[in-house]
Image 1 (cartoon, rainbow, N blue to C red):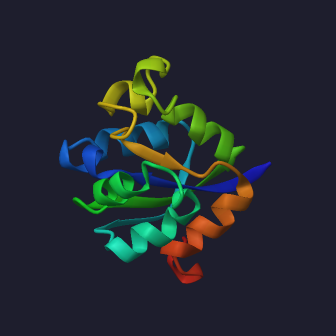
Image 2: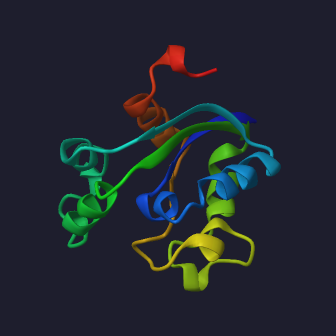
Length: 138
């Protein structure tokens, strides 16, 4: 089934100059890029976006990290997009990520792990409109 997912290329990946290489992996793995923006998250945006983690110990450091530099937000589409994007990202901890995955290739730690992805189609349906209006998705 064709579905949409949401992705963020995190500040570590953007600062390291890995945006182009990651975009190439996205396209060669069959994803259509419906929307893409390079932005800098405000503290309020990061706190709202990651609000589900507010009570967790890593919330403050996550917000600080996600606001330290530009990110690239993406709306992606393909068959089984959520599962396929999570597979392409690899395990959250790059030490456990499979060879050839984004996190194995570009992440430096469990927190500085290069990419974010929706964990379900329902999550993507909330995350995509957080950053994109309908008219921005082509």
